[in-house]
Length: 353
Image (cartoon, rainbow, N blue to C red; front, side, top):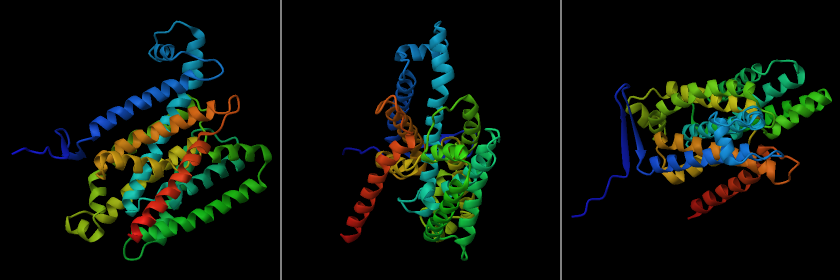
């Protein structure tokens, strides 16, 4: 009799009372995506008006290059921008994976249910009304805006519990409301500040430096591991509130903590790069197709998919119409909007069968 290998792997950490159940394909997919993300970063850093050979990029990053021009171009001008693109993609992708799990809706994403729009509203208000504010205040403001939007969604959707469908409906309405307030500020703001806000709203990592990297890196270092620790709870919530309660899960407490992770990840990414749209929608879908629905494997895979998407979008934006540069948010929207329509069509076809 031929034995079929189990489709799952169980990883246990001796230092922590934690075990992760992942699809057998996950390690290979994660390794492949890690290599792809690294290659995309090197290509992104090497391209520009002053081209740096990829091998020299690697040497410069490792501190092995003696050419001062390469050191300045790579380490000062391009590497922080490329790293910001990677981290923004990771934050948005994991936030999207959590949101789709919380709402049990594969079409949900932070930009669709109102979290990104709340972060954008407060960030635009800071750019337009307080243009002299320091850079580190932007992630804090965006986080507070996203948190305020999440709390408003949660409270307005509450009816003896927070049903996923109500979270989505309230979030869509809140998106429209905060979007109108953002448009109002852009209409009546100072033209110079408004132009900065408009570039920021399209989603771009242009001009990002080490000063922008650290305010993004710190929240991700906290909330990405926390999201992974809560992956099993998210799997349990996907089974339905009644069954999750029967299994001893504190539903509202876990849901609130997962929502906080979504706000922190999406808010910090939006604060630094603006509205890089559809990454939170596309990355979890692609990851789910490759490694299954278990969030223990889905989250790291989605994070790497999101990193690759934003990094490659930034490369394409720089090269397609050079020397004119397109914001990476324009590229992700050009890919994501048709993808979203295809998902709607596919789900509609399944519903009629």
